[in-house]
Length: 101
Image (cartoon, rainbow, N blue to C red; front, side, top):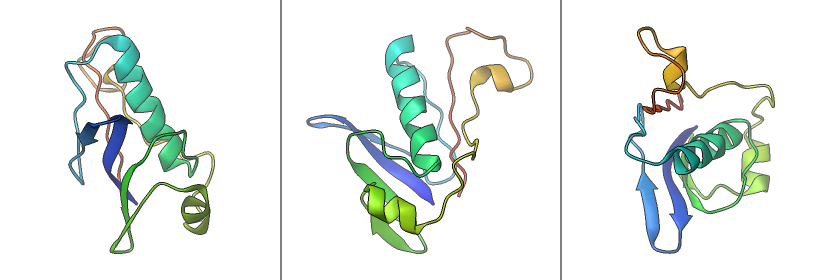
């Protein structure tokens, strides 16, 4: 599954690269909210808001029944934060996310 777009607010979309997206330039609260939504989606739990996913060549909205059909394990850990990368320190303010397929 790939997360291609998150709808953050009415009229505000965050388009994500299908392989790697770096989230930068957001204040800490907004960055954390984006990363938390990505992590929830990757665990098969839509946490509010709409968007666009790609799975098995199909474009899908992040609805609970569609995510459940994908059979994603709940313990999946797919978000890489800046503190997880070599050469960075926690709280550096440069958050990143990678939601692998």
